[in-house]
Image (cartoon, rainbow over the protein chains, first blue to last red):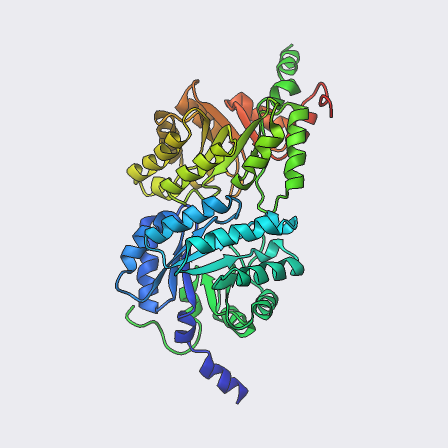
Length: 234
Length: 234
């Protein structure tokens, strides 16, 4: 009975709608990005997540579909400074981005310079008014107290999501971190699990721990392996 | 005799003057960056190389010394777009940067979109007039023909240096790549070896292959191991 219930909840359509279909490697070509867009439309993913150089291309490619254009900012080091991040976000939005995934100022948080840490997020929040803002806290470089501070601050400053990882550091999303982040931000703010999520099983574990979005380059494998139903129209 | 000559050329002061003393990890604290500045002054390194968030701090810390402030732009993915990179460079210069190390648009080069590839470098060159511009080509992601195109284009567009690597991808500087880059750019443009250079022996191999600058976080080990004389005043 438990199993049956779980199976009925765990349907691939639900999961697909939570996936940010992601290509962030620096050598990505337009052909690869175009394919990702087509796949996102076919599978009903939440967004296509790319570097800013592809923002305009992706926004045009996705036009008329329900799939959002998601662009990373200050990525992946989070060390370009508040003003540069805000400018980058503004440019991405002007190019058609619906969602901005920014990386926090990790050094400021770790050294306890919370003024600098807050100013950085606040600047990007101002630049993204009306758009969805996800704040990447890069959990693998933080201790639990720092993770809590990051999530609490992001929520206070109006972030729509907190997000675990860039996928370019020493670790990705864990169930423990998702649970911690969900506990800190409560039910109103989204939690995105990203970095190393490659299977349906792992994705569902994240969702059950509190994730409401999954960032992955393996979205098709995740959905394909999620149980009932294949992709529609692909 | 050969050995003696080589020893007399291989003195640590010469090498120190070629080193960009580097800290680019996202979790770097101001205390770590300050220590790097003090070390660079004491050892006579060419510059301190940091992320943009530290540009102002480093420029102030190095004021009155001969050590330059070097700031990375579009780092490490090179995928933030030409306009964002140019803005980032302008901001870094306004904050006190003497040298800008930009990452090329790797995807544009790999897919053969040379218009986009050139426009990216040209935009940053315009934004850095009067300052030193190094163009990071990320050799580990390119084949030899792409490396040649990158170096030739950077030289044509007025770059002061070509540079091998960010240190954040799958590989760093090799003697073969330095030799290739030197051959393509000729004697007028600098060549910077970066990524994985950790010993005097390796640094000298790069210099003998044509490098005129070494980017390293292990500058002190490199200089300390280079033979005669320790650091001055440290």
